[in-house]
Length: 143
Image 1 (cartoon, rainbow, N blue to C red):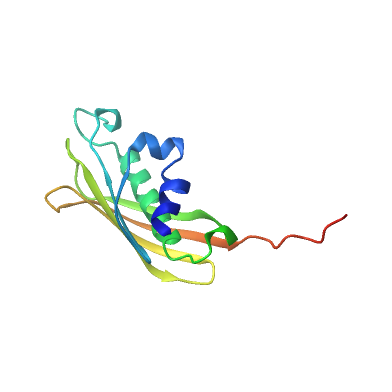
Image 2: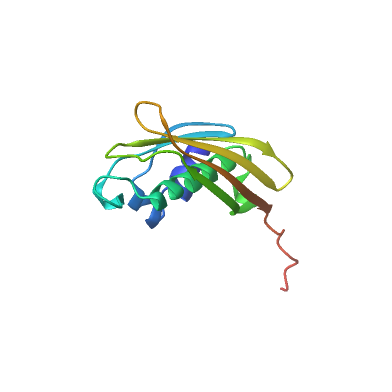
């Protein structure tokens, strides 16, 4: 169920589709994704744009937060905090991102993300805070 949710609710949006993200692995509180290299996501020459890397971090963290939810229809969620550190340039390569929920509170999840190049060298790291809120129960009918 988490993989299907991630594909349909997170990766099916226009922005995620533009990033061409691919799920590699999903388990409770862990998601691994890949962003293939494209000249459409570069800044100078073949260097992957930091904004594309940041979007990858936010997306894989969001997926990790939802990967541990048993009844997704009962929740809504949003990123509430985000920090990224760029560690080295990614030049003309696909990028892999791993996200792990390090703490899951009643409504806030803290997710660590590492982005690596194909050789396994770190390109960026991120810390994402994600809020999952229960949907309000339906009110009494006025009929």
